[in-house]
Length: 132
Image (cartoon, rainbow, N blue to C red):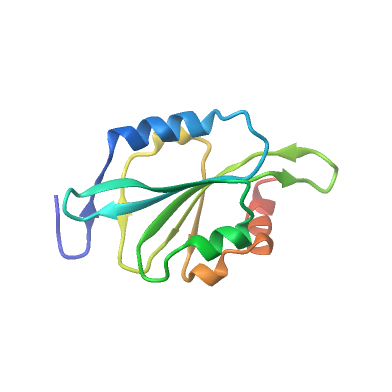
């Protein structure tokens, strides 16, 4: 299905499996799966996997003009000392919209950035503060 303002893409099968494993990872560091659109195949595919990366470092890894989607496991230190590891789906609306099925990621926190420079530790902590 395709119209001028809507592009529907599938998620590559190997990426779906990688995301499922990522959801249940045992590591306690920050980690990211960066995805991009393969326009020829109309698929969301793996671009890069990163371990031990802060939001500020992640920002530096993102291309300025390419539509990028990130699933980010973030070590969130609460004010009361508790630690949680929310999964965040971060995307930009640089080139339009993308819709695809991530139901196996519930409860996924979804955030939009308008500019890669917006992705900072302070920004992410502020966004996650609404959930805790």
